[in-house]
Image 1 (cartoon, rainbow, N blue to C red):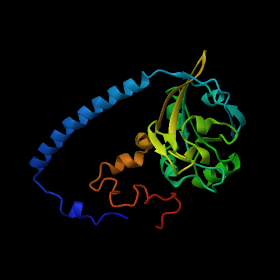
Image 2: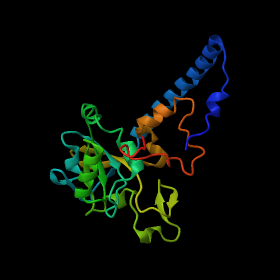
Image 3: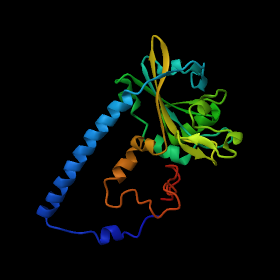
Image 4: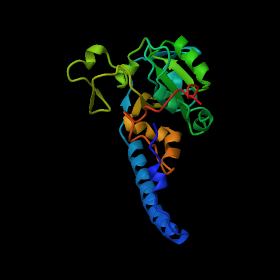
Length: 241
């Protein structure tokens, strides 16, 4: 449900000169934010790494593949942890909102030495059927027979959720869902495969181009009055209009 539009109807209207003054003042803040973001990104890249010693194997369109195989010819790998439980008939609609931003970027990432894949616990047959329905072309694999999702903090057993719950996003105690979204980054060198970074929750915002467009318009994301922020989201083939 969107708001009643009062933020547009009652918004201040000024002369072009007054608008230009306000806009240039905002530009200074935007430039400061950009510099801070660049520095934060530099510090993120400087984080220490952890060697991945567990032999993870995934089911993919080309058969069984190890984590090292997923890099292909490149030395960097981004994994989107797509919420899709083995007992679901479709992937998470909110992860699907994010995944609608992924088509077409693979060729660009590849030219910066990066491979990108999605991984879910659902069996490959379900993943392939849903991927075909959504019209996505990115590589998507199943971790059904491995501990990968559990080890990287996006899947939780019912036992783990009892009591205080399982840790999600390093501090939050998740008590309800067995599946969550996230992104993990890996590097491959002659010494092996290394885990370099993972992010969850609002850390995923930067991967959703639609939200960045919404942040530019007068109503913004227009989610404040909703029961939960993304209750408006549908699969892209299920919006009523």
